Amino acid sequence: LSLNTSGLKSEKERQVFADEMAEVFSDGHSNREDMGFESIIKLPNGSLRIKKGSNNGSISKWPKYDSGVWWVQDVSSTLPALALISSLRSIHGEENFEKLNVVDMCAAPGGKTAQLLSSGFHVTAIEANARRCRRLLENLDRLQLGEKCDVVVKYGQEWTPDADMKVAGILVDVPCSATGTGNRRPDVLQKDEDLGNLLDTQEKLAHHCAENVLEPGAVMVYATCSLLPKESEDQIKRLLQKGHVEISPFLPGEIPGFDDAIDENGFLRVLPGVLDGDLKQCDGFFVARLIKI
Image (cartoon, rainbow, N blue to C red; front, side, top):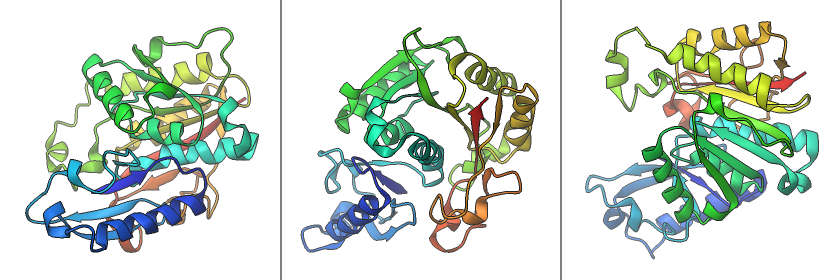
């Protein structure tokens, strides 16, 4: 599994802290067998990949768990927030992050929300499921980020910002088939091809955010952990046809380690087993970045 780290605002800080964490996990102060892991690998985005040992020691006993400086999050799952952070840095400058309002739709369990909070934004986290929302709050409390976030229990397609709230960016990681996680969860690949109302929900969420939440110049990141174009590229195609947004393409070197995932449209399309080196084990993911026009 992979660990993301919090409280770090620059790529340099993330890489330095990843090095420090790797040392903590590996040095004489921690018995790796007792902790339930065998090895630690630093990934290009600053995450740490932990290979769990045979005794599966409790994660809550791992170094620095109680201080809330890391959380479990697949590397691919970090991409949507990294995309939004990168874009807002270019537009507003990192020194102005604390002045910006960003929204995380479908926020639970909170990994992406924590990324945004750790960068300094004021975050409104929207989650329709009350049970998942409680888990979101618990996770943010452990990470000591709970007081910095407004959590709203509501369907995303029904939420709009207050009149005096200007949203600089929104992360829309929609509910999906999760076929990109098949390496870890083979059961998702055995489901019926009928996606029920997922496609309709995805379309309503994306169109609502583009039309009713964002002002011109604001950034929207649409993401799925799906391998299916009908949940990803096709949804963006329909959204673009409405004329409310345009593509903000990913640039080489922008997301460390993921240049080969940039497709001909400027989207990120991560396929399991395709990227080089330690990123081969990433979940499948799709990320499109858009600007309101």
